[in-house]
Amino acid sequence: MKAAALANSVKPPVFEQLQAPFSNFDYVDSNFDGETAIRRLFSQARSHEAKTCVVEQIKAEGVVLSENLEISKKYSDYQMTELKRVSFWNRRVASAKRIGNLSSDQLIGYFIAKKDSVPSIGKNDWHVFEAVFRKYQHDHNCVARQVSYPVKIAGHHFEIEGVIYCQQNELNKACAQPAAHLLTQCELDCCADAA
Image (cartoon, rainbow, N blue to C red; front, top):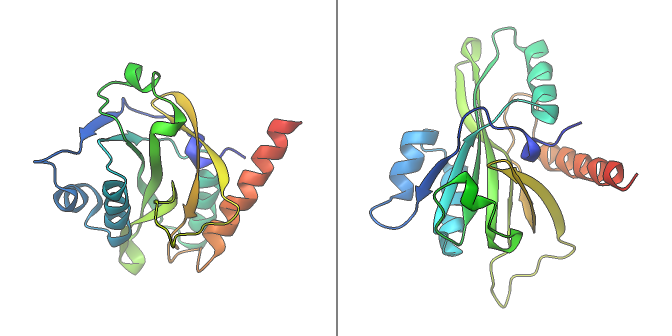
């Protein structure tokens, strides 16, 4: 099953330069309804001195499509209204062509944000379907057994070694289920690549 990080874009990517006057708060408020978890990811990117973020609308493929079908069985009025992949870079970049000139070492992290709507229960919220960020450098920051995750950005393939984060969606996933699902999927993808 296809990993969400490898999903195809449905529109050309948007390149946001993160230097002033860009505001993380205003951007998350305007584009992600002020979702706190997404605000934290932008803050984490800033701590890594991110210079550019690339925003892509992506297709619901693989595990995302599977989740949508599962939620639809539980809520007949369910609809996924948006799905975005946002990546952060330590270089200024303004085009998909230039992304191809970057290396995986210049990728700070990415997240996939999903907006789910279920009118019957008053739900219309963003959540972080998955995110992987490099660990930040700090003497007391230990992350054992980091894994390398594949991601496609603006049509180019990269890998990032880092820390995974997934947020429960309060519809069909709770607690550690999202991360466990993603780790299992990553192991399956790695096995398929090795075969």
